[in-house]
Amino acid sequence: MKENSKIKTVTLWIISFIIMIGSSIYQRMTGPTHPLPVELEIEDTVYHFKLIRSHGGEGNAQIVLQIPDTSIKGIMAYKPLNSITNWIRDSLTRSGNSLIAYLPHQPPAGTLQYEINLIKNNRIYPLSTKPIQIRFKGDVPAYILIPHILLIFVAMLFSLRAGFEALVKGNNTYRLALFSTIFLTVGGLVFGPLVQKFAFGQYWTGWPVGQDLTDNKTIAAIILWFIATLQLKKNPSNRLWPILAAIFTFFIFLIPHSVWGSQFDYQTGQINTGK
Image (cartoon, rainbow, N blue to C red; front, side, top):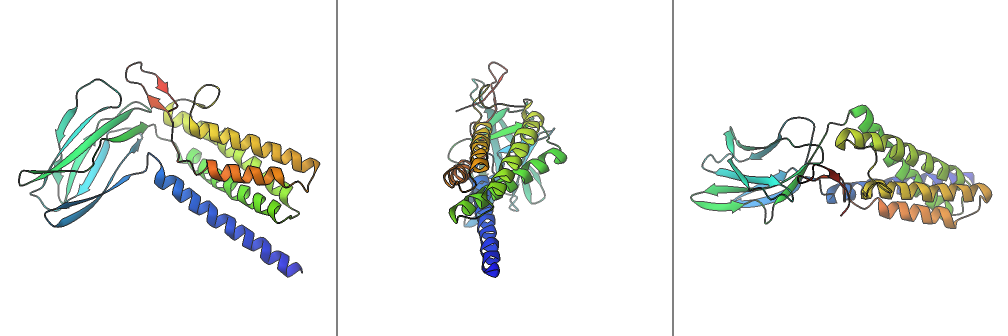
């Protein structure tokens, strides 16, 4: 009987871990700052590129296109997002087997839109059908960023595991819910604002001061798990609240990171959040 219980516990941890990893990959791949994959055919040769949509730290954003064919040239056009300025055009420079372009450094949360066209034998090959957006941010120290990411991942893992524990009527739901609440709180309300401060100059851009979706979904999950933990403290056999909290946390963490995030307004010089 003890052996069966051990196997069930390990199985639930494995399932929770797989779901956590899968949802994390999905969230990253669908996010607006994930590099945009591009496939382009030029005279029977297929090229694969990844166009950056985020740049952290000082200096200009570098775009490198691996194109050994030296007869191919490139032109880039860019301008600040939602600005009335004209497009600035610049030629890509050749460095060995690569064509390289640079986007000028922007203030934190500043966003440029850019287009790149490749040219061969007087024919133009656009890399995208519409302008690509790249958002700039400050450099976040590893000692802040790594704990934030790890704590959020661990919180998601414990959240799933607590939900499964409640579903199978296990005896450890309260303890798992408590750990979920603690990891979410430290990762989301301690390290999260520090990441935000280094990246965009503000500690908090969610409710009630802003509409940042990442901040808002984090605080919503923490509140729900806090309620679930209190309910379990009163009644350890409670299943409704931990299951609801686990389902809610799972779906809100599927929402891509940085959606409705900080955006520098080039007209006012202010950072705005929201849709």
